[in-house]
Length: 307
Image (cartoon, rainbow, N blue to C red; front, side, top):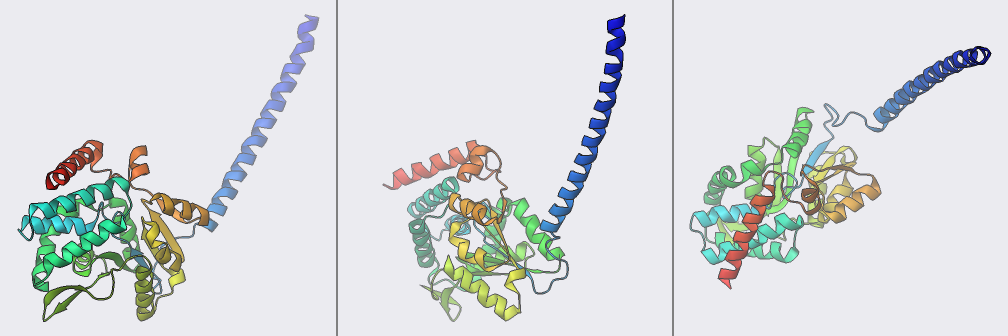
């Protein structure tokens, strides 16, 4: 009993101290959480800013707004309409499969695709391709729009800001996509035309890399925008010049080089691809591994048949 009497006060005393320690810990946690929230709110102000007329948003297209490359999807649509032969489709299919699996642009592939597209549309009327572009959007592109990126663009629109696509794809295709998404407009590669007929040449060079940055800079000057208050979104390290122009750069579904660059500079990242493998190699979530594998096999088969 003596031993028990000696232990009882100790138990009560220890319990009281435990209660005190617990209450102190809870209070510290509450204050810490409140301070963290205040810091977070200070670091992450409301964005986009409602009614900021000096701000706008610039979105890359391929693999940022849409899964895959717009030019390749456009090529599929032209093939369906007998603009070119099966051997040309094999090239488009192979390049598109490579692009979807690698998640990055191959300069040689993109150059070949542009050259093919220019030769295919040569002699056709601009109005004809614009009309066909509307149909091709519904057939191949509408279902490939990333919902997450679309929501980001809508947030800028809802804030009263203008939203532009900036892409190496032909401006006619880009304009169709921008209009169908309810965006302000598009900056794209301009193909030369005389009296409304394509000549098979470009005006200047493709809107790619540094050229995108120059286009955004020129548009901002014409629109009276403050680039430090603007946002830009892209998946590719090729667009670092454009992303570096604005005060709010975002890496969307980024390739490896852009992801490293964005982390180094503390840029915001968003990845709308699902699964570890998809995040690693850039496979579109909606396609699924099986579908991509099947599409790749078909592309390889076409490529081998062409050889």
